[in-house]
Length: 100
Image (cartoon, rainbow, N blue to C red; front, top):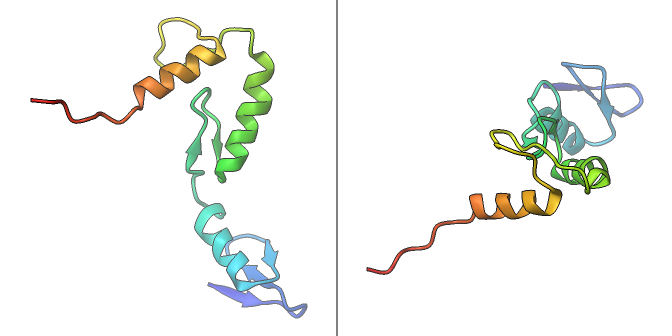
């Protein structure tokens, strides 16, 4: 799984990264090294290892184009950002039990 370097760092066997703690190496192996990033931007097709990086991407890359329409995958027309957020909220809102 890993080996310790002479400078007391834990090295990944798959790549050249090394870490000061075994827990950092385990995190690297679990989420970063050779693993497809699990968080996908809902506004484009970029993927991210960490959710906060995806959030930063949305705020920086998509909000600066706020006044221009954004295409959502499978959408029939471009949405403005607030329309997109409303669409996503409604599309992914959990269903409530209907009264009989």
